[in-house]
Image (cartoon, rainbow, N blue to C red; front, top):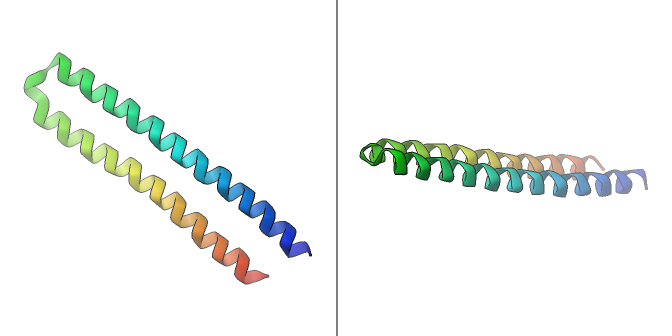
Length: 83
């Protein structure tokens, strides 16, 4: 019965972690996009450089979110296998 309680707690914490990662990623991506559009508005001739930097930055943010999802799934398998 002790393992079921631990799994329930882990499940709740996993949901919170995934939600925090998704919210943080979405917020960061929107702020990066706003900054890029602001930079394009101020200096349109630097559009290619700004676009490249924006795409690279968004890819890193998205990868971090996917790593959190992967970590949660890996840990849930470890916790479930331990009981």
